[in-house]
Length: 516
Ligand code: NAP
Ligand code: MG
Image (cartoon, rainbow, N blue to C red; front, side):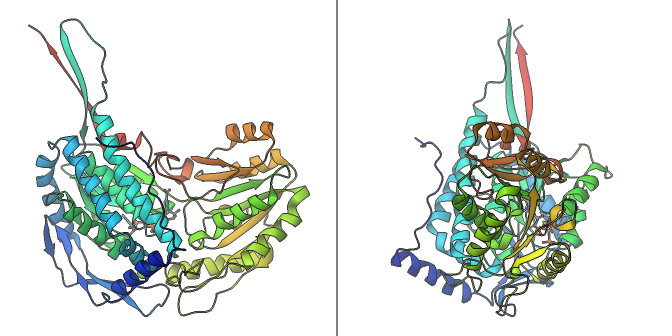
């Protein structure tokens, strides 16, 4: 019997034996930098002779791995394989499909230190951030396996005289799964496994910054016994092959997580009919955020300050849920800023392979340039309280940066920066703070800190985001506990890790037999 879903417990790195295992895994990953990886299509390795190189953002000249790169021909090859595999996989019982995910979760548990090491090396996660990402990936596998069993038992009809009505949920077809680099194991695994367990087959295009982590899931799924053609791995540049994947007439759905710009482009392209296409493509798009924490005077300021700093600077602020706007009521404005500045100055920035590092590098040179340009804007539009420059090292290190006195409507208040930059905004009172919290085009996460019951109730009703937290940080959603996904320009209102999610990958078929 399968036990109820439980979130995966985190490794305790204060124990020397765990630290040692993590160190060994980091050495293993470092020793594999000269590996050249193939595409994986129809259960076979495929090479193209054109390459993507993955570098370590903490030591920018260090190669992490080299990948054969998919072009349009390989997309077409993968599509043919996925179409063929769909004819068999769609008929496999939900139970058998769920077992593959449960086995994959077990394998990932066994290889957890190695999974962490790839994330520390390829994208600059600290040990604890890597551990949380890996544990979330296990959670998605365990949760969606159980969810598939639940969906397969839903009785969707009422009795009718002389008929046997039934409703069942069937898969859609071949889906494109296009994840971002920022939760390179959790989001990639969650999107791919949800599509697979519901009976679809997949073209997986990993983010170009994190192909090694995508390949690791392919290895794990292979070991878990996923049949050939169900998961096809086609690393390649989104700009070069993305449109071809999305516009392909046989693509039935696109499951995307990434920026607003790319998400909107995919949505638009998917709405256009390609010759030979016989369905309306479904788009599940999880996009950016400009996430706010409101702090009221009637609260525990010390705890609130700790939560703000963790939400703003964990993984260098590169979470879609990261706090990048802090709205403070007037009477605590200066003292609260002093508290977060003091805590921020204690954060360690440096090479993430060291267990003592809190903040590693940002993802790549483009990110670094973009973040530094917002920092320059902040110096004109606000009052620099700490940070404001690159940090030392041979990677893309940026100091955690706080600007006070940012005015509503300016770029630092409105635009997703996706880095360690926090804008502080003053509100006259709690009412105005909630109004300002809602005044962006996004609607992903927010947190409100107050102990006043009337204010809590008001915040719950008025703050329009997909994930609202009261007296807690605005990052760190747990699978099953905090189903995750945003409103407005943050996406198509879906909830990853929630009980509705698998429905997005299926369609309901009603069959009724009349007795004659
Ligand atoms: P991104 O630049 O939009 O890229 C996301 C994925 O889309 C990558 O695999 C990328 O491939 C691919 N892509 C690029 N152009 C494409 C095209 N024309 N057609 C199809 N695919 C294309 O986003 P990112 O920088 O990786 O991730 C950061 C963003 O993700 C932030 O905005 C963040 O808020 C958002 N995010 C949202 C959530 C959520 O749940 N709402 C969660 C995590 C992250 P290449 O890598 O090859 O360019
Ligand atoms: Mg890289």
